[in-house]
Image (cartoon, rainbow, N blue to C red; front, side):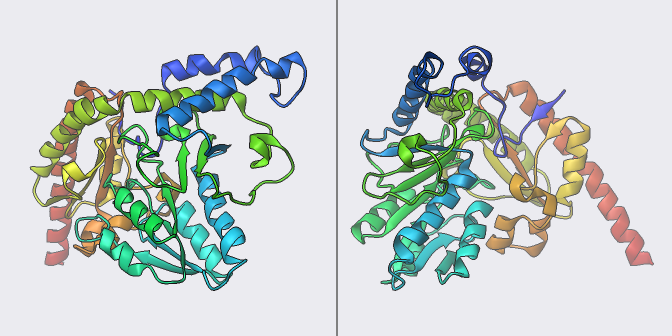
Amino acid sequence: MRVYLDNNATTKIDPLVKVKMQPFFEELYGNPNSLHQYGMEVRPALNEALGNMYDALNAPNEDDIIVTSCATESNNSVLKGIYFEYIAKNPDKNHIVTTSVEHPSISDTLMFLKDYGVDITFVDVNENGGISAQAIKDAVTDKTVLISMMWANNETGIIFPVEEISRFAKENKILFHTDAVQAIGKVPLDLTKVHVDYLTFSAHKFHGPKGVGGLYVKKGKNLPNLLHGGEQMGGKRAGTLNVAYIVGMGLAMKQAMKHVEIMNSKIRALRDRLEDAISQLPDSFVVGQTEMRTPNTLLVSLRGIEGESMLWDLNRAGIAASTGSACASESLHANPIMSAIGKDPELAHTAIRLSLSRFTTEDEIDYTIDVFKKAAKRLRAISSTYAYTNAVA
């Protein structure tokens, strides 16, 4: 059996999305900016796709949704745009507040901007892996121009206090950005109820195609272009539109939000079954209370078992999991959020992330439980033998 439990890294494309995209590769292949029939005949599908995105976010029509290549581009557009539009023009307002566990497209971009005079405060997670709203508020100064905080953590699934902080930001005339990559399709989103100036997302995280993402921009909070050279996206992001992928993202987003209830019932129950079984293993530690997390995510550490060793055993059995973010997986460093929690240094090297999707089945979870238990037993036996041998030596 093959079981895919790395859905926080990427998801398989929804079959309905694949069918919807197909005509735009061979039949409806015109450039939508062209004035001839080939161009004009693809525009209705683009409008429908953008409409699906507005509906999924419940975004007001006067606000912008700009299609990008991915969330990394969207995050760069926000942070570098804030620098050029606000900080460079008013160096007295040069402070940005974020968390210590953001995606590298946030943290690395902020470190780049630090060389240009941007002052950054990274707020640490608490002992439960969450972010204290009060800690974010306490980090704000009279120089703060932006608060940037992910909606849900990619490692643990823990939902951050976006609603509370967004209200605080509005009250204090501070710009607010949220990376919602791990939230879409897992939690309800309504931008008429949550004050967000900028929101970023990526299609491949909710069963859309890779290589396309989006950036929501509230009216009046315009950013300078990251890409110049064309009038696409209302002149706000140059480049020929990837029609097939935009169409796919629109439908995928619609489907994802349609299935939020299923994710929080059926898939949450499967995740909890998996979590309960793993939690019964000796010296196991799960990050975050179940009700505080997205319904599909589990980050667990097993003391004495290296994460990479467990991944190897799972992979041999056909099960895909990870030790954390795919964007940093090749470094094989300690899991960043486990390190940030600081509960036990050893646990930072033993983390395994298991993330389900709405396509995950009961049989797959039962199989994973069986394999995980056997792998844990085998690896503990090896670890015990190694420790005994070293002690004798």
